[in-house]
Amino acid sequence: MPLTLTSLGCASALPTKENYFTAHVLNIRGRFFLLDCGEGTQLRLRQLDISLGSIEHVFITHLHGDHIYGLPGLISSMHLLDRTAPLYLYAPKGLEKMLSFYSEFSGRQELSFPVIYREITGAGLIQILEGETARVYAFPLNHSIPTSGFLFREKSVRKSKPRSVAYCTDTAPSPEITEWIGGVDLLFHEATFLEQDVRSAAQYLHSTARQAAQIALDAGAGKLLLGHFSSRYKETSAFLAEAREIFPNTELSTEGRTFSVPRRFISAT
Ligand SMILES: [Zn+2]
Ligand SMILES: [Zn+2]
Image (cartoon, rainbow, N blue to C red):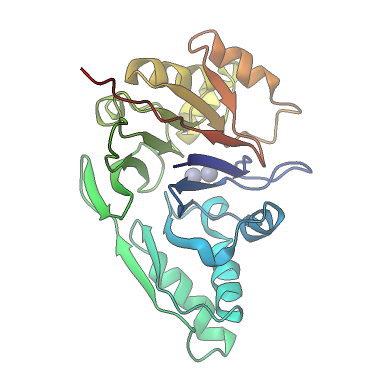
């Protein structure tokens, strides 16, 4: 009964020699959810032996290129692999129009599978999917264009407590989200900057490692994963040290790492 989050990339606006753009894959009891799809996402999926065919739902936080430029290639590969199952895309307004641009000029008549768009609008915490293994919710973040965070709540399993994962990027620190994701087991939160560059974080509506840790603490999260690191920093260990001062159970969501959320059994009374 696995529940795992695997990092496919942890860069922000510019990739580095080591780091691809931000993307993650969430496995909830054998159902796969892709979270963002920057350039290189399908290559990382290949490298990690995660089948493209296993991806059923793709959740796009916002339409900045570092989160979506991998989508045309991923969809094209799925078509070449003769996929027939529908692909569900959840994103703020505009994704369908952006992707239609590629198909219009590619000379391709039709995909081998249906693509179903779900536009995310509205305020507060909104349920956007009732899946077989989880319910998925969207909520607004604080960034320069409309951006959604996502909360995955596992459907209950006999004798164990439902687990949850939240995904928050890109965003300035938003204290209001702590209510929506309160008690989450695993929180991915962007940390584009270190606290020494807190002014840049405020200017571009991003977070520092310290601010991300404070959100995790206020939300009562079980574990914090940091990612979406600016390429201005030569190495990322300082992110970990800064965040752990506030929230000790922090890890870096660097490429290829997989984080499990263990089952917690309900004791019989
Ligand atoms: Zn970004
Ligand atoms: Zn962005």
